Length: 319
Image (cartoon, rainbow, N blue to C red; front, side, top):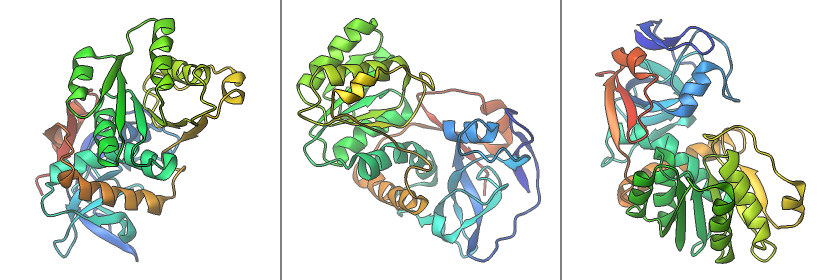
């Protein structure tokens, strides 16, 4: 069968042939119809992600949509290595296959699951968002950040603050439910003042997709604004702006900031799968919006390094 094959560390997948996988006990064989290209898919395939096995060759892709042997339509996650989602067929644990709502199409389901889960799990499993709270999404102009704004509203946030570098896309985030937008193009001192102003008004949760300098300024501003009164749950989800920060120890000692992460490993796998099910159920009822671009799997080599932040690339097999 055809698949996107990764032959070594940091190598672009090639479109080629691999043996058809046979399901073991407790597994489903899935005929894949759609699989999205995400940052975690790229970094796991390259061997740089903290959850990567670094065992090659492998088939790229951590999740997707397809049909079981009985014709049932499912979303699946974490196929059994070395098989991946970007193939004509794959195998995955039955517990990691979820029925898809009838009114949710394959492309949208494949595109929305991973980026939507990043904030859904952060809100529900880590920060424990309560109705009426205020949320700040740091890095709200990317696909996951835009969904984080929408999902915060759906889960009951009273006020949503969004940050981002792309001013045009930041303005569009307001149409998705952000009450206040903060450009990240300011100098550090001005940015810290902007953050302090918002913290003074009360922020309960920060969902951080960037890390780097903006995260430093957020944490410092939160401490200076007096986070003793209202503990801030700061949930680290992504590191688009850098893998490391420099944080004065006094920031944590002088405030009630709760610093935590959300991702593979910080939430049990079965709870992540359950969260994806809730997200897929809400995708239509909540009107969650995500832009997509479909590409044949045969074009994986040309499309792999594309970085279209305005649309999620979804590979299709023609099944």
